[in-house]
Length: 228
Image 1 (cartoon, helix red, strand yellow):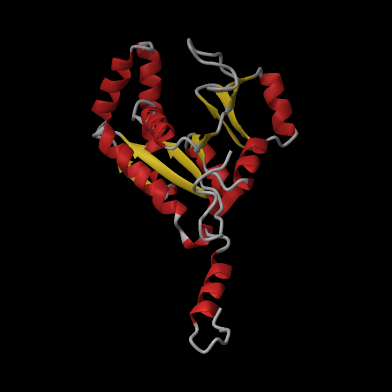
Image 2 (cartoon, helix red, strand yellow; image 1 turned 180 degrees about the horizontal axis):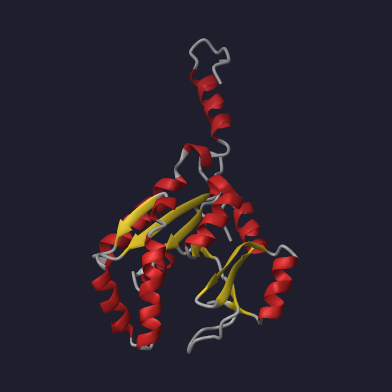
């Protein structure tokens, strides 16, 4: 399958973007991720490996890859993960193979991971990673949203709220920080960031060759230029 952003009409390609979305639980990250995937059909999604049990409606290999703790430990020891972390008493990890495969095609990959994963991913993959952190408008609004989901017990909500303060304290480890007080506007901002990052000069791997040819063709003397 051809990808329009991969096959540039001018003949040069770009490196893929590893696009990270993080937020406290309930701040709207998953909703924005779904909207981004709907708007960008060629955007691959990173499927995390986890030791937690599937929730109703979740599909193994689509939402997550579900494994037991012993298998997860084996994958860690065999260096299968780019990053992994403990979250809410469970383990989550990003398998390396699918990420390498997507980057090799010049496509982009979306990550829905926490600050620990974002930090490890950046340390491993460097300039390919773009990190976006989404804040709630207030802690009171975050609590209201968690209650409104009606999926967690009061004890779980209290634990998520306590964790949220710790997560927010890591805001300065991100390239972009947005406040999600309007889901549509926040999505548009996230989408704009992705489109702008795709155009960064450092990602245009064939740009120098294109410019050399452009300058040679544009020289009225017909002589080549050694500027580049």
